[in-house]
Image (cartoon, rainbow, N blue to C red):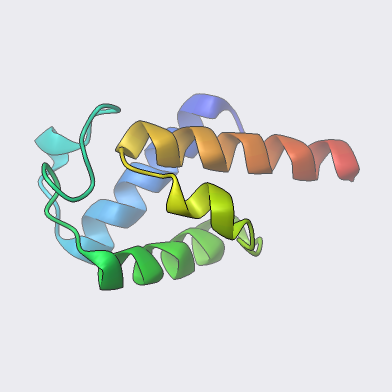
Length: 87
């Protein structure tokens, strides 16, 4: 899966799960301010991403540092690359 495909998969999954406006799905979109997600949504987001990409997200420190959609993109791309190299 390419980086662009990963980004597209993330955006589509989040738009569907949280009924977000596709036009707001920009890398610099702040999860809380721009996309209006809350802390409970963040828990759901982890589950949505785990289901979409078929891997567990256990890096709590990294998850806590996520503030923008771009942060999510970068996290999942990094995790996907790590898994691919480990296979």
